[in-house]
Amino acid sequence: MEFYLNNKYLSIIALSFLCLTGCKNEEKTTEEPIKTVAEYDMYQPSEMANFMNAMYAYNLQIKKEILAGKTPATLPLDLMTLHSAEMTKENGRTPAWNSFVNVFIESQKTVIDTLSNIELKERYNAAINNCLGCHKTECTGPIPKIKKLLIQ
Ligand code: HEC
Image 1 (spheres, rainbow, N blue to C red):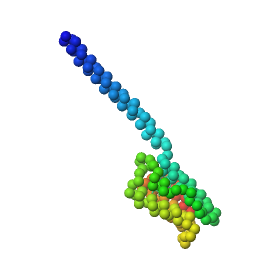
Image 2: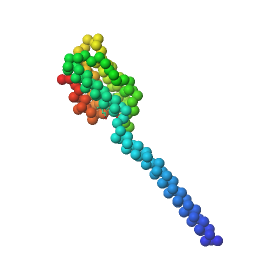
Image 3: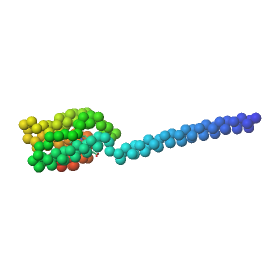
Image 4: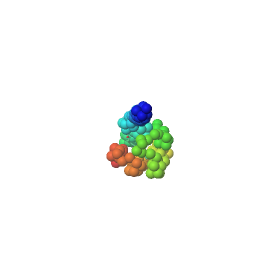
């Protein structure tokens, strides 16, 4: 009888041990996909990064037009995307971001304002300097690349 009892306790212990390790295993399997998603994210440019690259390409095009003596008049990008695009986890809409974003949007719009009294090159460089203004605190990596957009 004593042996039977001991055995019963042992099996309960063994069973709960199995259960515990079982639960742990379950945790592991649910953890793994999350990990791979996070790793995947790091190599996947964010919506915002894609939009930034589009803004870079657009301004490079504008720069070429200005240097060729043309007057750019179209802005095919929806700058409101700056307010809606998803950003990478390290970056977010910080107070610094918020203080720069609308100033930038306005200055980018003035580049194609054909009625403006301000010289085109000056308006263009002001927009690029507003890219740089935000980048100085929010994302320093692309600064050398953005500086190349400036018209000397
Ligand atoms: C209001 C702040 C702000 C303004 C204005 C801004 N940027 Fe950015 N930029 C950022 C942030 C923050 C990131 C990082 C995006 C992320 O983490 O998803 C970024 C990322 C980038 C990148 C890197 C994209 C990549 O592939 O990782 C480039 C290039 C860039 N910006 C160029 C520009 C240009 C050109 C302008 C102006 C036409 C500009 N940015 C205006 C904040 C700004």
